[in-house]
Image (cartoon, rainbow, N blue to C red; front, side, top):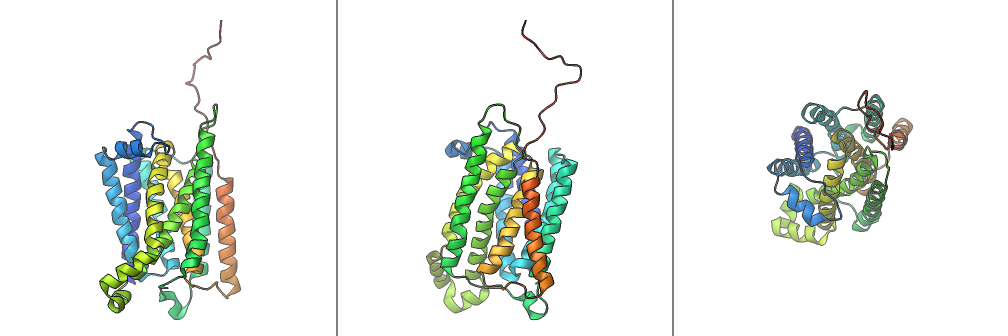
Length: 313
């Protein structure tokens, strides 16, 4: 259990450092677009700073595999939430990003909502250490495929609005929600992959048998899809928006998605206690309400003090 907690904290650190390094690299690159994925990849792969951030994210992925082998979904999401604090601190220190008072209150409310959901998922007694090992493939696809479609559609809708003339600067909430849906699916796929790499499964099926069974499952293909699309979508969004806002929104959506739908998909039952059930419902509603109420646009840049507006002669 403690190895899982240590791995989750390590994954938080690696993910936060990776996102900040990628953001710093992207600010020095020309404008990138998801409509030109080959050019996007060519630009970022020539940046040593971006490659360092990507390696940090990849190491975080490896740590997350260890987390899901030793901790239940609910406990893992509760620890992953703490990474938001480190991310905001690193963004302020290394990127010079500042959040507004309204956004700080919103992030606090999101943390409260996630805490409520996590508390609702905890069980007393032996259930606290239970780690589910399987889920029906049909159920996983039923949950994941519409989520992927919704994430791609939402991102495309946000992209179309950015091409409008005289638009207000976007904060990136829509981008964060869209990428969060993809990463939520990826989190479920990581959970599925970790089950096939568990010691109990390897001992019963052998390494070769476990790999064959894994390739017959939808999990590696969900990871390939979310990895490819998530890479392109997240890099374009990070370049345009503040990491201190888009990453917490993305993390919120991912954690809620994984904690609620992942718990149901992998066979963890809804809480029977009325208080825990109320916490889960209230936390979910609060998080969605906060996301919907967050500002969709940054304030327009103000002209320098004393500057006069040019008027035609």
